[in-house]
Amino acid sequence: MSAQDVGPEDTWYEITDETTAPSPQVLIFPERVTRNIRSAIRSVGGAERLRPHVKTHKSRDVVRLHLDEGISKFKCSTLSEAVMLVDAGASDVLIAYQLVGPNQAMLCDMIRRFPGTGFACLVDNADTVTALEREAQKADVQVTVYIDLDVGMHRTGIVPDDDATELYRRIARSSVLIAGGLHAYDGHIHDSDLSQRRERAAEARLGATRMRDQLLAEGFPVPELVVGGTPTFPCHAAALEDGMSASPGTYPYFDWGYATNFPDLPFVGAAVLLARVISVPAPGRFTVDVGSKAIAADPVQPRGTILNLPEAEAGPQSEEHWVFTVSQENTPGVGEVMYIWPRHICPTIEHYNRVAVVSGDGRISAHWEVTARGRDGIAPT
Ligand SMILES: Cc1ncc(COP(=O)(O)O)c(C=O)c1O
Image (cartoon, rainbow, N blue to C red; front, side, top):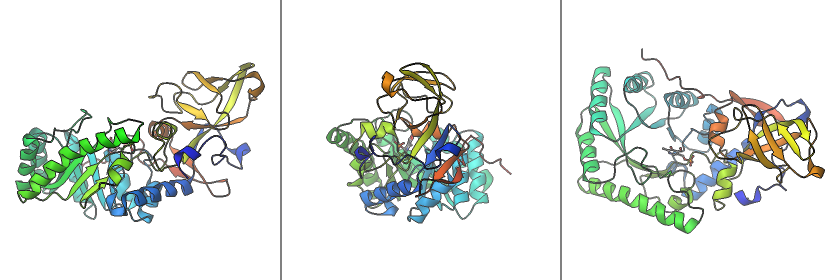
């Protein structure tokens, strides 16, 4: 099944115990999550070629589903996510973020406290490298770092040129830092057309592979080159060489935005919001209990689609209300359940402390904590 098949006719999102399910809440379909994980592994040709980002689900349980499929390397953005990964049993954690200030000491502290887990972080400048060396010396640990390459997103990173190569050499020669490799995230590539996306992803990858090849030719170790997110996943999947990993994040849950923009992706929706109509102010107009505090508010409207009423048009949204319009004859009644597929699932999940897990018979059988929600890392000891 492809993302395209997950249309309104398909009722994968419906649960059988609707009447007792409070709203709004997130429903997760673990079989579909596992299907997405397996699709990702199949696409790259082996679990060792994946380093998934956990920022979408932030869940210990979803990490465990990955571990069950043989994936052991992960990427995260926050120290809370790193702690969650340790707790779930991940052995290799790349904090794909620039750690500065006291957060460097916190990383060193984690390295000391959890010797069974390999940690790494990103750097893109010499000052951060110097500061990290100082912290590592103070804590008497070695810190693995990857150079964050700017391959076109212009968010963080250093352009893969001579300066970047020199920075890598410096790290590789350091007594307290370990050169872990290169990180090339291409979150700026959003072409719907697969051939265009492929072309741009290949171009982004080229700068990184050239730099890696030069360093290898000089005898420096480059253990890993990490590339891409979910949109460019199929573009990189076929081009991964030994020592390269793909790092999609959204794919285990997937969302309406990616399914619509990138119909070639081999993933299916595995997370929806269960909502209810709370008011019908006029025929053809109804309001549901999903405001901007219950669904990601970063995309422009529509911020989601109602899977069981796809013709409904999204209108104004306030913090706890969302108004839709629809034809008079299709206007739902107060209390009716609406299944909303969010356009952007990652910040949607961030609104919830836990998600409901739907078993194969359509019942809510458990809840998963959104373990790494929030920003608390661990305090240095
Ligand atoms: C550094 C980094 N890597 C990977 C990802 C995963 O991207 P996606 O959510 O498109 O799968 C993200 C997403 O924000 C990211 O920032």
